[in-house]
Image 1 (cartoon, rainbow over the protein chains, first blue to last red):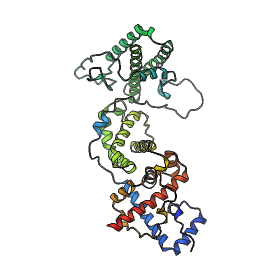
Image 2: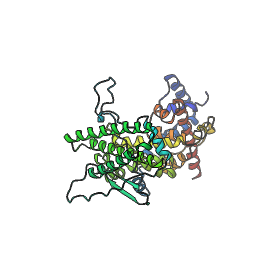
Image 3: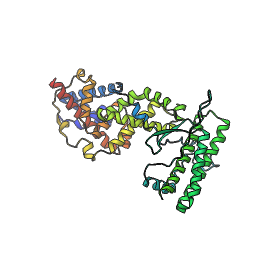
Image 4: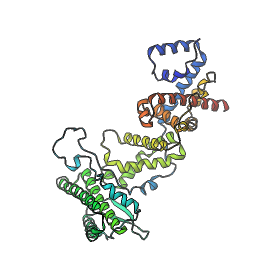
Length: 240
Length: 174
């Protein structure tokens, strides 16, 4: 009898042997009881593994609170609508291309922010109470942040509050502009233009398709990015 | 889905509750019960961050499944050296030809298999679970784990033989 073909029994089981090798294993199995036993065990193991997949497990404890507490970070936006169009064409609208304000230059500002720690400058904005029966604002996403007193305050990005926060931050930047490195100013202004373009285009698109969830998500993301960038810039001026 | 993409956490919680049993089962199979809860949380946090990228080309369940596999693999890559992750070449599990067989009855017990899989090194475990349980091809596994197709095949065989050895011992002792 030939040597036990144990090294190839898995390939045999998975029908992953060429015909000649498979015939050799077949011949061996005909004469070798112990190899037939191994093959039978591996077959049974394969069956047990396949059944294991169908055994769902209910969570022993609710994992949701731990997840919900971590849903405050940035979210990715939808990629290009036409990713298989390699030839150059007319300039795509923002929602047709992979949108990113993460231009290489932004690394400069981001590095500065990271070096200064996680405390964010944030002008307190008191949200106006929603009118009774009013529809939910287009931007319903809220962000929790520590305002410095240890109290986590949700901020709604309804238009009025958002605009007020932007105006405040832009004023801070104007007043503190000379404290920023000129290279940083160039990066900030370039990226703010990109974001403003995205916001403008999103608003224009939403004017004709106000219920489009994707467009709403893009607008929310663009506005959030503008706020983040302004806050970071303001933080840099504070840290200098 | 649209509401969750737009930032509605209540809508996302409904997605979580619909899909968490299968994702938790997967992370338990791939990484063990002690790490499964944390990994499952990581999966859903990542899903929240990337939900806008879901384009409906597969089912949400499939999308989440892929994401969970990637999360577990990323964690696996942070573990030790390749020697610690995989079953060593030349392990004697391949030479136990004459060991008594394990009955089909014994292997019906999922818990036995779960315990036996827990005893595999993480790399060999990942190969076994991805191939024999989740139905991945060796080419896909090689890409996910950063190993060759040959290594994936070899580790699968060693994992199967090692599991056979564990289950044989369990059956003989009972």
